[in-house]
Amino acid sequence: MRRTLGVTVGVAAGVGALALGGYWLLSLPLSAQATDPVATASPQASPESASAPAPASLTAPATAVAEAPQPTVQAVQAAAPALTAPALPASSPLVAPVQTPPPAATLLAPSAPSSAPAPSPIGWPLRSTAALLAERSQGDWRVVRWQENPAVAVLQFPDLAQQGAALNRLAALVEKGGAPRDRLLGAAELLQLIQAGGDNPQTFFGGHNYRLSQLLRFHGLASRQGIGLSPEEQRLRQLFEAQGWWGEQAADKVLITFTDLQADDPSTPQDEGVDAVRRESVLRHELSHARYFTDPRYRARCGEMWRQWLNAAERQRIRKVLAEQGYDAQNEDLLINEAQALLFHTADTRAFGAASFGLTEARLAALRKRFHASAK
Image 1 (tube, rainbow, N blue to C red):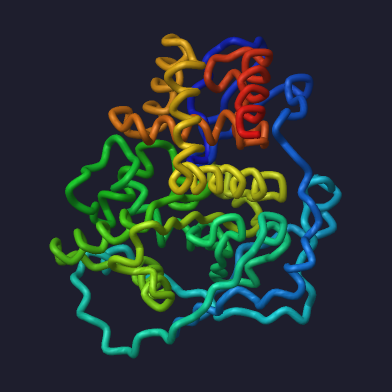
Image 2: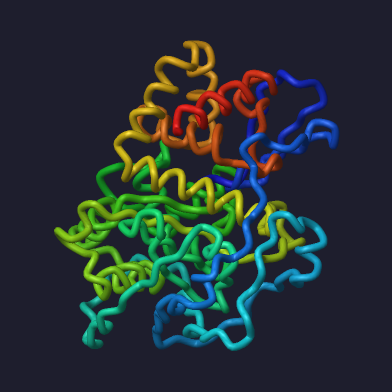
């Protein structure tokens, strides 16, 4: 999921857009930021979040780095009490320290096969959506399976920087209209693509969603090209191999990611901040992508929405906006998937509103009501 909407289709007076990179971010007047009809307050963590085993510790020998400054729990709860989930107790197990990525120049050098022993098999615990929101990263990668569909791996990164280092190049291969589909970008090419859209590596995407078959193809291309991968890209593969979700076993599996809370970096023009409201909105947005990948009935309903509920002019506007944000406008499946996630599962009004797609508030509310009623 990208972080900003760099274009506003003018319908509602007084609505503006900030092209800050990555996650869609609209500047709306206070009067326009009404409660989204599909936004729901975060439920408290279910009992399972206290009794179920902790997410797997994904260790990797590396030098620990300082974490980005995090807003206090009290500040977050004061800003958005309905959407703030409780942090884990201090007794919760910690996971391994984060890795320090190498200089960009080293990413283009072919890497030799690792002689280190393969990680031992791990069993990822199940977590409800409420528990996913309640658990914090504790400074490292935390991976679990979604309780609603155990074929979905949910990976929480401690910050946008590590998420980007692990997945931005895959995002370019799969989703970006200006990137090739038959080869991986080198480090310099990837940075150029990111900067061309006004982003930095942190704000390129706020969350990610992929079929694991796409990750397998990514590594196949890297091997054929002889291109060196970052430690984060290699670590991502290792954790799925350790789980047994690789090769043929990856056929029906899905990966979605989101990040922990973090403060904005005031020294950059982009917005790297992730507060409780944005974090929940990103997670629910990405989980809807997982449902689209794995639930044929849900996918069919989204296709019906796209082809029958929206009129030709609305489809064209949505296609144009997504294309301007760098999505591959020739990939109809990608456009439908992104449209449903934004229209029906993005409650943060800074990220998406009716004017984003040139809709009136009444039209968006009617679409949402019909979509959610059809799911019952």
